[in-house]
Image 1: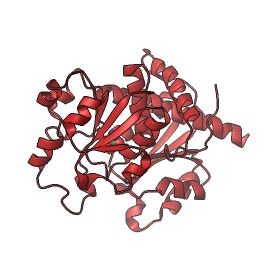
Image 2: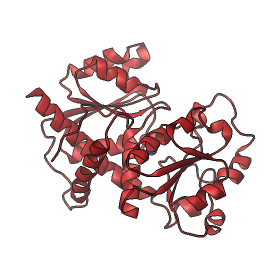
Image 3: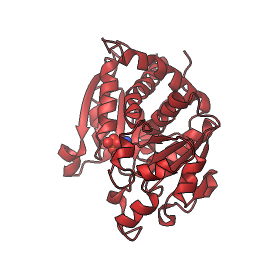
Image 4: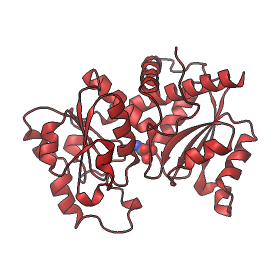
Length: 312
Ligand code: CP
């Protein structure tokens, strides 16, 4: 098996296509493992991993913890809400105290963009970014692209539209980097107020008409409106957002072809996606969640192998 070109997974922007392919091939193996009656392998028996979550999470946190346990790593979990961060401790002090307990790898979600990069320069451990503010969410993009590869055979040459709140979305940015590296064509679709000003410089086209975007694409990745990152209103009302950018069965049935529907979760049912679409056989949402465990096992395994090689 090959080796990653990086000691950390901080984002998709700075990893190579070869690294992504290696992660996918490794995930293929782990996907087979997690579908066995005994879902555990001893690969990370001598590795201790800390999951540091300074922001809420359901899928990512559980998925990393399961991935770590399936690889037989020792796992410690940290939640900012119940920690000494509330007493004023800095990020570096928090992490160095955890590392003093002989932790090898840190999986971190943080509200500040660049928190993982900052940490990787100050602590002696392999860092995995589990989402840093509105910046990157690399394992989400990997599991999304892996799910497209699984469903359609390849990512190369496919038309993918990312719909919704692009401005506040780390999922959108990491997906754009990942899908483009793998040879897909990417469009974004949503209200102008939820488009970052620099978006076209990333090589994506902007489409404001959802029906046209859906007619063009093979895959539509529907994003949540991230109200928690908004200090002002970006569209007149939720009703108008739903009318223009919400995906329901009626809009899907008007298309001249079948498309694949994705969503990173958490879903706001009835806003960006209706229940009859989210739960339909067009949707691969729960496959994305399943693949998340295999992708995270692959990332942790490959980074730990690199770390062992580096330390020895
Ligand atoms: N997709 C995703 O990151 O979900 P969580 O916020 O629940 O981890």
